[in-house]
Image (tube, rainbow, N blue to C red; front, side):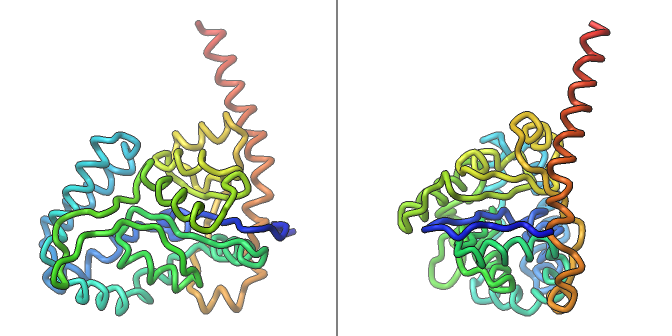
Length: 273
């Protein structure tokens, strides 16, 4: 069994990137080559990992997002854009391709087959997200855009694609293309993307964090479990072997079990009160 999406008019499926389409942080994935080429220090590597962790743990907090944004902007200031693009192009096959979830790649293909645009939506920089999109056959991207002056990052952030700001990007592209957001889909693993999921008519969670899983259970949103990061060549050879249905079949059962457990915990707490 596979998921089927009926052909529609202008519509889109919006996919968060990290831990939804790929099994790692896209920004941190390029830390090693950035360090190797002298763009960042060892201390920067540790601080970037910490900033990413703090964002994932408390990403819905405006202060946390602002601190993360400002730190990353300062970190990138002065970098040559061409050098960053070259590093990403040279290491994409090694650092990203093996970590693309097979289930995500199939789901993206099914949305495209239904005539729906697919848009990657990520807080990572456009210079990283766009090549990852190309790897997946996705040309539409909503990502963080840094200011550029004389071929170098200026240290200013033109658009930070995180939290509620992702929705700004989604609504902008929806207005341009005539999408009815009530007919659109969105996928994410993080509670920081609740505004994104709430903005569409068909939200789904993928490998959700604890907070998002609780919200999904409360709102009867599908909960998908992606577990098979597979390189592109193998995905093409073994496409039927890891169907999205493996995740989709667990949605109804998982939600039902989740509600049962959730209800049991509530009853237990009530009995103890």
